[in-house]
Image (cartoon, rainbow, N blue to C red; front, side):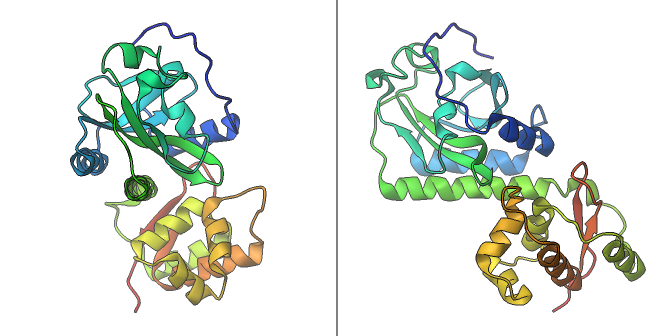
Length: 271
């Protein structure tokens, strides 16, 4: 990890307790390299023709890289992380020339290795106003970043989020699929499921939000709220039950009823 003293103030930490809880719940920190995440950084590096691309996760006092291209360190102290600014908003954050930017000119990552001059980061948004890190690209030369570039980086960040949701299914993969009686018992146990499970189930079925909306008779915004686990606007029990019934009818098994170990398994495909 790169270590150096940096005294410039960091931006305010928004929703920090909720953000850290979401990050730790996903159990991504300090996990081994994953080819899926590595491919995304390799693609970003190639598409934008930059020397460095990273998937950065912001813990309480450190920035840790889940995937990296062009950088050999596992992370940095959090006070040095450009991503502290990226996680303040849902839009892409860009620094065209760090040496000319008041907040970054004296940053050790600018004055020393890896000599950052250009930075662009798309936040990894896992719930409304909850951003656990970023997909970012770095250059050692100043450069501009077009609106289309911003849109492309944001789309790649969404691919990272999709991979994170799918990773939550790993504990259920490789097991023998249960029979239909187990599926019925699962439905009878509880109608409570998490947004992560809904989103993962939808991904397994290759359904868009609009498709799930059509099949459930619920609005697309309602589906988005269900998937976001937004406790400030919790979904009704009838809404959750409807979503669960439709997904189970398509062959999805929801494993576990609490936030500690939610899972999803595809039992059968039903056309």
